[in-house]
Length: 335
Image 1 (tube, rainbow, N blue to C red):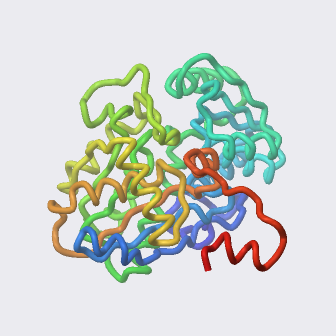
Image 2 (cartoon, rainbow, N blue to C red):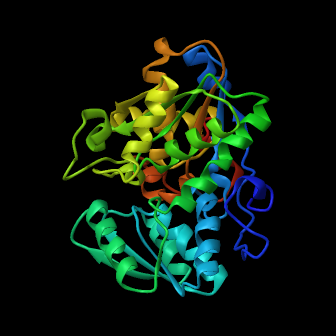
């Protein structure tokens, strides 16, 4: 990805490129969503990145620049996806990765990834915002590169997704909708669009139990089933506000029920299996469909459904086994 967009990224000929061949993710038409909202809807599915989320798009540059600076370790706070991505890219670069995360608040799939890639994990009795404050202090005191979205290289690299949308669609959409947690992604997309002279309305959606930007106040105890956006004090709060205001867009709240409805709809009607937080943008355009302007709508789907298998199976009652005969299977299918 860095090589493809080198002319728009802060790299030189001597920058070591740490890559897992991220980026180039598909823009998938979603006709079932189109039928509901009355606009042509496309899903920018970032879940097909190497570790299954959009974080890889920014992590390739963050880790590359960390290596260039001589860092021997990276450190991050995480609700899950950042830890998985940081651990993978650190492993690729043969440096250490340290992750501080809220105890008991991380989806199993994401935690498994960080562990598998060899990260050193420190759970804390606190939330993401507490973890971020700690890792920021660690990066100032020790030889560790901070790779959360407060790292400007993350934003620089994540803006490339906007370039891909315009390349694939042939133009910018009328509306670009996406989940908002730490708010780095909406900030990055807006930066990318403006750099190429495009200005879609940016619609961001927070979970109602973790909606500090919507309500204009920090959430000390954010709570939502959408763990990836369970953040009470976004690091890129100002960037999100700028993207909203400069684009004539909006940042709204969607409930957990609305998020899960969209999550299941995408899996069963569109064929895209994403983690719950990733469906927040789709939940938002369904909720506010009557306010959509004319033109195409792009929703960024930020992570793969295998990130959070527990949610996928939580309400499923598996049928009992039947004998291994054609007759038994036929009867079970009521054929």
